[in-house]
Structures are given as structure tokens and as C-alpha cells.
Image (cartoon, rainbow over all chains, first blue to last red; front, side, top):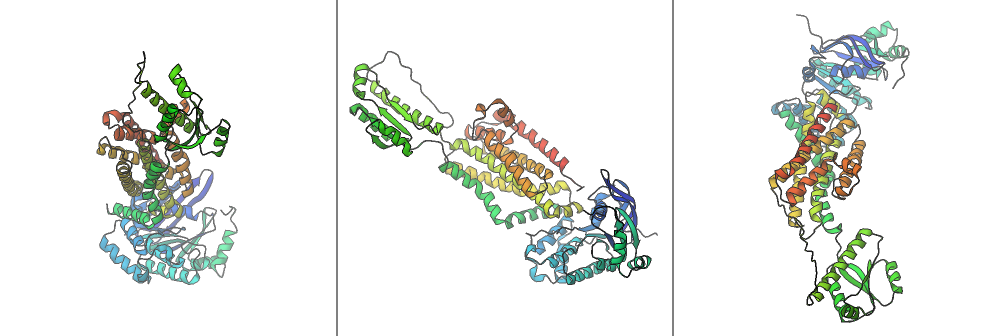
Amino acid sequence: MREVKAITTNKLTKQFGDFTAVDAISFEVNKGEIFGFLGANGAGKTTAMRMLCGLSLPTSGEATVAGLDVYKENEKIKRSIGYMSQKFSLYDDLTVKENMQFYGGIYGKSNAFIKEKTAFILDHLHLQKEANALVKSLPLGWKQKLAFSVAVFHEPEIVFLDEPTGGVDPVTRREFWNMIYTAAANGTTVFVTTHYMDEAEYCDRVSIMVDGRIDALDTPKGLKEKYNASSMDEVFLQLARKATRAAD
Amino acid sequence: MKQFLSFVKKEFYHIFRDKRTMFILLGMPIAQIIIFGFALTNEVKNAKIAILDHSKDAVTASLITEIESSRYFEIEESLSSDKEIEAVFHKGIVKLVMVIPAHFGEDLQHFNKAQIQLIADATDPNVANQLTNYASAIVMDYQKRITYERKLPYTINTEMRMLYNPQMKGAYNFVPGVMAMVLLLVCTMMTAITIVREKETGTMEILLVSPVKPIMVVIAKAIPYLLLSTINIFSILILSVFVLEVPINGSITLLLGVSILFILVSLALGLLISAATETQQTAMFISLIALFLPTVMLSGFMFPVENMPTPLRVVSNIIPAKWYYNIVKSVMIKGLGVSAIWKELLVLTGMLLFFLILAIKKFKIRLA
């Protein structure tokens, strides 16, 4: 039996009026892979990601997420994915525990599941003491780690992370990536956008978007060889310089 | 169902955590009833007047006693010359001067006719009007008593009866008004703000990616405010019955029923505002300027709709509070039943459906 890919797209396009934000991109993401989705500001990453999450309807092209069609099986996709947005996505005026109970609840998880999972995450993040503290009282790094834990709380097949480590210190970023590795090792597919090129090195495969198109897609090692670069930073600069579109 | 309950629970957390807002939401109707009931009243009580009595005889003495003993007036000064009239108005305390010409008592007895001049400070025309009316009424009253012995050939006596509000209390008017205002404010503004806040903070995206249906988000958001508003209705009604002594003459069930209908209309409006705005400030601004102000001005609660020019009268029809205000007056004060308010009910139901359909259509399931 052929293995079902986590994500497939075929000439996926999104237009806003005359402006083509995403220009016929085609790629596949394997199950359990950490897929880095790179691109300068305004290259179309977020738009592409939003189409895959069901937040935005494609103009044309095909895409499947967890083997489900983005046009027809939207509601089913929602149950199979987790999402962490650029903006901080927890409720500040709720406690750590209440946030987890809420997200567990809206995914229809049982009380027993929520209780067990909450205890597990609190233990894992060493947040037992803060379980009943309001989220707004936590430092940013902890909030981000908590937001990730909440995004995978319902054990989705695929988790979409939109610039998850913005504004976070290097130590916390490292810890954050350890969490991503753990999730991937447990079979969760991770689809992540980032501006940090050191993070790109942590990915299994990386795609680089320029002006709405995917200009490169390979393992970090493969890309460095192809562009004869010593780091992902150089690869990215070489590609991004070709961009004609103004950053937003 | 579990999804829904988790959501409603979260909404309650939001409200309970924000103690200040909650306090305002629950305290506002109480404060408004008390302010309107005791401070803001256009009934004249103990107005300060001055009397210039040129006659100083037995008749004027008894007339002045009559005025003094009424609860409307308090005699601040007795003047002795015409020159002092101007001066007394300049001081600003006295709003009415009663001038009794010389030989008042004699004239009355010999010519059957005498005159009294009332001079009022008309910088506030309403007050001036009321004061002169009250003063004339007292004089008329007095006249009736002294002419009682002598039969006049023709007299027409008008006898007044104030239906539904025999004591002419202002509270009968503003209790329904405050109800409409509070419900609109709590339901519309708060629902709009709470939904827009999720958009602003970015949590709305997370909700839209999750399996919750948008309609569920909306209903879960509305439920806590429905509950808060119901508490508010009770506190207003309890205060008005026991403190302001405004009776509930009609059916309480009907009153609560129509109030819930109005709450639903307000919630739908809030929803519509939230669908059309992106920031909390805009949502608040629209709720206040586009809704609250017209409600206060055009619902008939502050200014009678009948006295407005035609264009404004037409506009007042699209204001939900106007219809609710009429219903509350009919049911609560006049004690009427459904048969008297079916038209208003129909209009409100129509508005509810219209706003709801529009809001759901506008509420974006996808963000782009």
C-alpha cells in the first residue's frame, strides 16, 4: 500500500484581485517530517499555510492535508491538524490549566484525556507550580512553549507553526525545537515557517518561497551543496535577492 | 455539546476575571435607576420664589400662606419695591417672582377682579413654564375657594385624572427607558467587544482552525451576556417596584418574555457590529455612537417621538429600543396584554431575524 503523504499540493494558487500571492506551488510533505517553509516577508508563506489550514480558500489548484481534500473535506481536516499562529494564541486571562481544558474541550476530548494530558504537559514543561497562574503572568518563552503544547494537545497528525519562535531568546528557541523533535519522533508531521536560518538547519527538508513560487526544495544539506553555500543563511540570501516583490 | 460547554465556561472565566467590567455591568443599572430616580428629575420641588406684595392685606396674606404651604414653592425673599425684582433674578437663586399690585384685596371685593403678575426666569424655558403653571394653579385653587360662597352664573370646571400614573411620577417613564438602555449597552457593546477581542488577539484564527463551528462561537459568546442581562432586568424591576414604587401592572412573564426578545435583538446587533469591525475601539465607538445615542435620543424616552419632525419620526422606527420601550410601558405601566403589543412584537421579531441573518452572512468563516 502506498503511504499517504501528510500534505500534497498541486499548482495551488491564491489570488487577491490582480495580485497572485501564491503562484501555483506544488510540493509534498512526508509523514513525521519536519518541513521548513521559508521565504522573505511577503513571499506568500502565510497565505499558503492558511489555505492548507482551511482559513483561506484556494483560487485554483489542488491540495490534500492528511489525505483529505482542502475543498471538500475541510471539517475533517480541522480535526487532524493543530495550528500555532504568529500572534500569541493563548488566553491571557485564563490560567495555564484552563487554557488546556478549553482547547481539549473544543476538540471534543474526554475529561479523562484532558486531565491526563494536562498533567503530562505540566510535568514536561515543569509548570506544575504555575498550573493555576494566569497565562499573562508567564514569561514569553514559557508562553510559546505552552502555546505549542496546546497546539498539539489533541494529538493532531500535522501541526502548522507560523513563525513560532519570534522574539524568543536562543536558549528557549533551542528548547522549543527539542519539543518539535519530540513531536516529530512521535509521528506528528511538523510544518513550520521561520525567519531564523539556524532553525532551517534543524528541518528535515526545506522549501524556499520567492514571489509566491517555491524556488528551492531539498534537505538543508542538499540545498547548501546545490548553491555552493556554507550555511542556509547564504542559500536564502542568494534566492531572496532575486525577489522582485516588495516585502510587506 | 462538550465543545459547547467548554466554550461557555471559558466565556464566563473572561467575565469573572475582569472584575471591574463585571462590576460595571451589574452595577450600572442600579446606579442608573438610583440617579434617575432621585437626582435627575424634572419635577419641580421646593423652587425658590420671591414675592413683591404691594397690597399687604388679609387676602394677600392668606394667598401667600397658600403658596408657602405647597410642596412646590419656598419663599426665599419678600421684596418691597419693583427695583428689587431685577436684582433678585441677577442673584440667580430665585426663579419666579410674584407681584401683587396695591389694593389687591379691595379690588377683588369691589370690582370682583384683581390681577397678579408672575415673572419667571426663562433661561430654562421648561422650568419657567412649570413654575408659572404651578403658581397659576395655586392662585386658581384659591380663587375657587373664595368664590364658592357666591354662586357664579356660569362656570366650567375641568377635572383631571392622570391615568396609569396618578402621581405623575417621572419614574414611570424612565424605568422602561433605563431597561432599554442597559440591555442595549450590555448586550450589544459587550458581545461586539468580546468577539472583536478574539480577532484582535489572534485567538479567533485558532478557533477557526479548530473544529468548532462559527455559529457555536457566536452562541457561546452570547449566553453569558444573556444571563447578565437577565440579572439586570431583575435588579431594575426589583428596584423600581420596591424603591421607586413603580408597579408592574401587567404580566411579569410577558414582560420577561419581551425583554428576552429585545436582548436577542441587541445580541444580534452586537454580532453584526463584531462581524463588521476589526478592533475593539471601533466596535465600542460604533456601539456608542451609532446605537446608544440614537437610542437615548429617538426612542421616546428622553424626548417624545410625537413632537419630532417627520424625518426623525421615520428614523425612530428603525431603532429597536423604541419598540421595546413602548412594549414595556404598555405591559408594565398600563398592564396591557399581548393583544396591545402584537405590532411591536412583530417588528422586534422581524428585526431579530434581519440582523441575525445579516450577521451570520457577514461572519467570516474563512479569514481571507
